[in-house]
Length: 419
Image 1: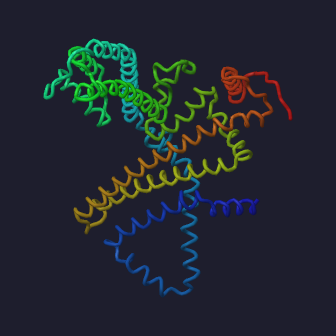
Image 2 (image 1 turned 60 degrees about the vertical axis):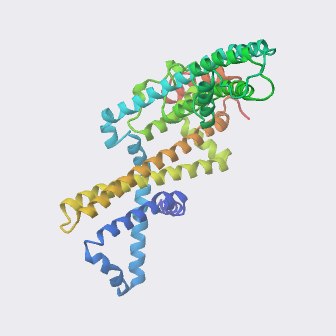
Image 3 (image 1 turned 90 degrees about the vertical axis):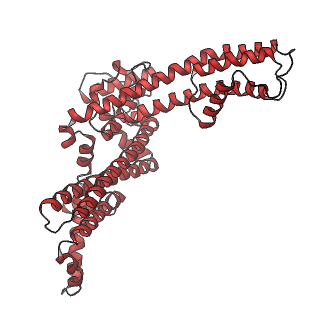
């Protein structure tokens, strides 16, 4: 038993998650504390010269290094707890959920409204596109026998066309009412003058046709962008999403933090797309990954290391900022206002940056997790000796039944398929 424990510790010391996820944040944390404490505690400045005069330096240095490794190892065993705390499922953020959760609910509802607005505007542009193009074509045919636009003449639609072209150059939205006004005014110019193959009227005619297509594409881009933001940052489905699972996932299931909501998107994806409850099947999926796709499992582990590292950096930055902000006010008599401001501001900025980076790393990890569900779910069914479903509806039914049988011990009958 002792040899097994030692082998486990040895493998942990050699892992990337230990060095990048725990040792590096710990070294940076200790260096920051020494940098601040050195100004107020003289024995710290004398510590390194005094260490050169120690007897048995090798043994004492080894003991100090062993202590550092041990502290980092203890911290590595708490990464899961730290992640739960920053997700808001445990600790202070969970206690403050009644304060934090409403802000995320408002942000999600705003995102849903923006998505619906972009979708409605895109549909309005698509519905009007043929009519606009027909009006322009008919006007151009009606004015084909008219004289060309005189040089120096100003188009009736000049103001609208300038705004449309400028918006297209800047990559911003073109509203349907602006396109309608431009079509109405330019059609008068087209009916009164021949388009020709060059000149202001010809350029405006082509620019407006291009702008109509661009306006639709721009709102289509927004629809896709907002949908992606929605499913990458919040659990559940949009209110107008087709075929929501079990009437959707309620807004009450929002987490109190952005990290928590990002984490819950993984469960939403597997449930909406396949009917699979990832909380039930993750350990079985992990086993299939380790057995049948070691390379992809290594990618998943690397993504998790980045998350662990940023989460550790966040909590150590938080502890550093809280401790030294209080210490410089109450416990350090020779502290200055300038030093207090430098420590408090730099520490707060570090906390904010590490939290943002942790969220970004968690989004990458969540995307890798979603891909692992896509790629390895059938291998998990095969490892359970279950036949593969024939279609999407059968698959959703199978995962729902299997989840009930696995997590709730509901009586379900499954045919086995043996090799």
